[in-house]
Length: 198
Image 1: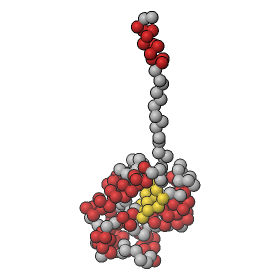
Image 2: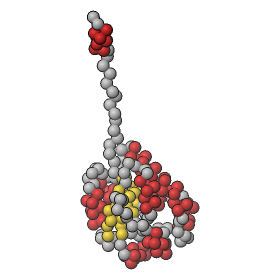
Image 3: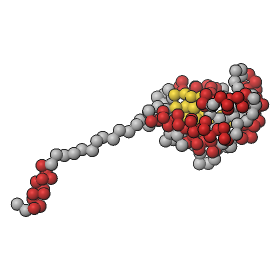
């Protein structure tokens, strides 16, 4: 028997080893409903959550007390106040993605740089911009109670808003639509299914 034959015999008698199956986390969707204060972000994000089962979070709830106090006093936040907050939001979405949980977040995300931080969290993020006339938004803000963002900050937020750029995945909807129509347009436009996938 030749050396080649011995090698072949040994190879044939060796136990076959199979690679351990790779576990892939279920694909998740992560939606950020964005816009200036009073545009209806929370209402629409909660509606998307109810329609699809995505886990809802309100970005304002992640602000440290120092940021909240500034906003209550009508003082616009500087970027230095926002970076830790945005990184925490990105981390929250990334953690949910690792758990196989899809999310929908209500967050102003007014600047491209803010949205870029949020994109560093889960594998992909889709944005829904609620946009429209300042008059409509101002009137809605006047009807709200118990919210710490005063209407006086609306002009500052409108000035800060950076419109979607061509390379951004942002679905823009008109705030003049009813909340129900906004939710339906968002779910349809994003191709979301009742189980939150799509």
